[in-house]
Length: 321
Image (cartoon, rainbow, N blue to C red):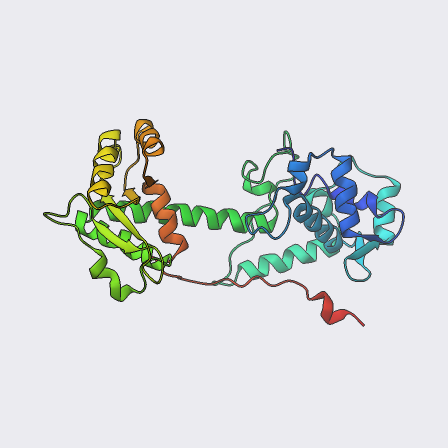
């Protein structure tokens, strides 16, 4: 990816408004051409999936220019140069960034408001913004936090929190008993919509002596027209599941005359185990520890919502005549 960071596009955004009132979507398209972005780079989405990364950075560049009084909003999704912005373009700098904007009183007041907000014990302090350009333009994942937009900082922090929580979940699963892990596997499947309700949890667990190599049997649909047979292996990290265990599970499915199986482990699968699962005549889905932890997060198993942050934006319809 070579998507420029939001400070890099500040001067191009300002220049785009030199001809008069412009629409932000037109500016996004024009600058994508100017930066010679590929179709993949133009289509690259934020994790929310609601906006492209490049459009988000152009919007934030326009917003920061507005805080400095260099552009102003005119009507829905449109903006234009102010007299101050025109004066900047009369003798343009090589680059406009946060350091350049800090010379304008309006921007200083805006940053002062941010600082006041961070003094609130319940608030999150704003991230420092770098003044130096990046060595090259990269993806949001590759940029240091100081070159990201507030949206990207927030989503990056969310990814970090979820990654840490997923790791904690995996450690707790490995520290628990095999029976507990089997129960969690079936509980997750029920949370995903298989097997009815949590009232069916105990009935779905069949692990123990004489289980025939199957730890759980759960209905694939609400009517129970088909069943999924489950094998759950609570292994320590580094103790990977090999091809032999997959073949044994295949034999168990054969004994039950089943054609679908789910093999879950807290560790990983060897390449030969994955190859074996692909080659066998029955459908066997493999879920390793990290994948299982992410599914627990997604479906709220073993975790709960601690706090909800509501992000608001300007309601353009409210101001339409």
